[in-house]
Image (cartoon, rainbow, N blue to C red; front, side, top):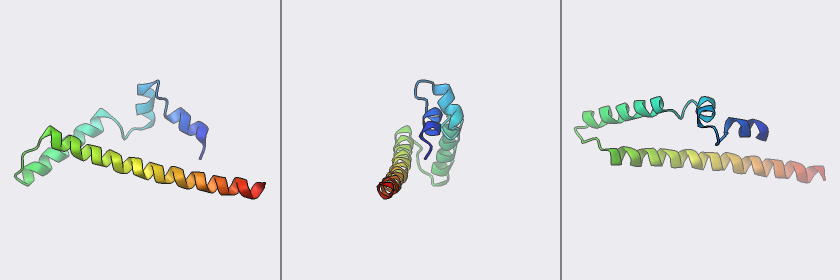
Length: 87
């Protein structure tokens, strides 16, 4: 993993730059998710609530975070093994 590229794409001090480098995280994408959620609830004859939508978004973010942890852990283990072999 190229840590320099990771750092530059996740500049937490510059929100606009971060959003530009990670287009999946934008107001427009969340607006579409809200529309999809509302349409889904309407088709099921259920009430769409902000609390329920936020709960689903939280679960989604948790899944993404778990995937990121798995990838980071694998990268750590692989690099650790390689550095051990080089000694």
